[in-house]
Length: 417
Image (tube, rainbow, N blue to C red; front, side, top):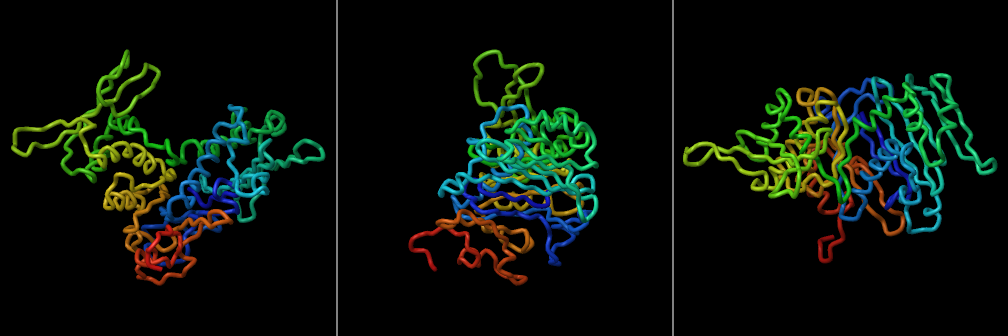
């Protein structure tokens, strides 16, 4: 479960900004839109959150920040990272360009919550820490700080961190994370935390982001998988009776459209799909190729595997501009899958950015689930919740947003003030 994420000095974010999934004490939709965390200090967490803001405000950068943190955890021990290119500091003033980029996350795993973070400069990991909260006080399992005078790190370890702590620290390069290095060297106590970043966190953001349709194809191969996928697809097109996926080995040029290219131990395969529809004249079922389906149906097929996997595993998915090719009613359906114990028994979470103001509806979201990102002329992007404005129950949120009551709107010449 994701509790909070903070970033400092990354792209458009100059100062520290935080997105929180901690539910307030609002009574509305408490049984469906929030869930009990089982953690001391965090009674209930939000199942979903939505982020609004104009283009170039920093919405994508917020999700990219978490993606960069995740990729650093997963790859820093194996890859010789060039931190100067990797960390992307705020570049519009000299002090920020020279300052550290800081990523911090609070998440829960097996009834324990953790604070983990690190600070990156162009040369090295300047600081890294992990705090474990088995009780409200917490204990620092490890911390490293670079000390210029000695040209090395000061290390702090807790006796509660078991294993070859010093061996792991000696093996940690300045541009690598201790968490990653220790797990590669068989730190069993830290392995579940690494696995959380690897398996429980899915970030779909950036210009090359996308969902892999082979996940959906693989789900269709499993027992009962089709019974899960078809209802999902029928939200886009209720006349889909069946889906048939074919895998063709690639031994030369690919002829015709394919859904995806799949790589596995047995080779490289082209995935082609047929969507079966009823005919309008009763002459029998008609199969349409994937390329012949609407963009919305294609998008739902591409997304189905990942969405259903997230719900099945109780993972966290962050999606940039969810409205792409999807009707607002389909987005509402996707959100509703996360909001309710029956459809989301494993407490999966969804965070997404959008321009779709029709979702600013208190039947869809609680007031503490709505966030905004706004970029100022000098101070960089700012992340803030709707609750900052103390909106009343039943307030017309969409109208208030479009009239500028909550900020985070594009400046359009001639628009009403």
